[in-house]
Amino acid sequence: MVRLFVSSVEGLSRGEKIEIIDESELHHLYVRRVNPGERVALLNGRGWEYFCRLTVIEKHKAVLEVTDVFRAQRSGPKFVIACSLIGSNRFDRVVESSAEFGIDLLIPMLCDRTIARLDVGQSKERWKRKAIEVCKQCENLFLPEIGKVSLFSDVVDVFGQRENTLLLLPNLGARAKSLHLFDALHNKDLSEFEYVVIMVGPEGDFSEEELDYALARGAEPISLGDFILRVETASTFCAAISSYFMSYKVERVE
Image (cartoon, rainbow, N blue to C red; front, side):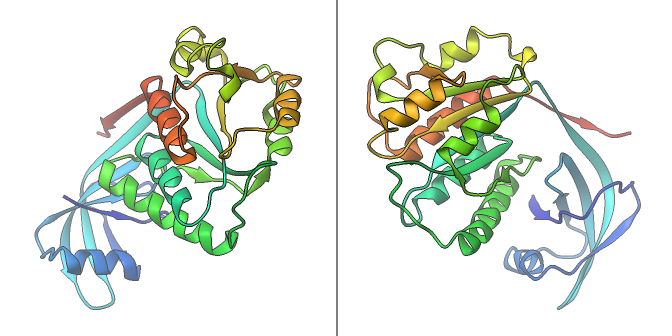
């Protein structure tokens, strides 16, 4: 089924009609050759999905009639990945995997050894578009929030030493002596936390100063296994394991 994204849509009931005027979503309908009478799903990125019937499609608008309403429910902590920026379009993969695995918040991060310096304004627009496309493809009804580019120390200051936050710090020095990410999450009662924050460092790992700074403020060192992972791979790995501990349920709204 073709899925469209319109962030402003909420509170629709069966039988209601809505006009689609967004050029990219109209283009999607044309490319997929959706004809009047066929079914379309409409997402808003905040847990709602509306099954619709296409009634009208014109050059500058389409009209949908709602036939069914579904709502996704999430319980437990919000999962946050703070990931060092990386060059070229490699951070796109970080965005895509966050959307695929249901991460709530992705924070692009500047660390001591971060090399990439991107045009953040243009990049954030591209990242949002990619996240939307992934959510449509993967039937994830929650669009991840992409936070502002933040310094490592600022992320630690926001989330460190908070009773409602579990701050996890994968690093190469923790491979042999710390819990694996899965075990670190499995051994906790996650219902006690509002946030689980996983910090993914740059190529070359966090600096000693950064490690000391975070550990002194309540971060827990963890391992991602025996191998050294690329930044985008490490982020995807963290997102995938996090998804195992998420509670996600979709129900039909009567």
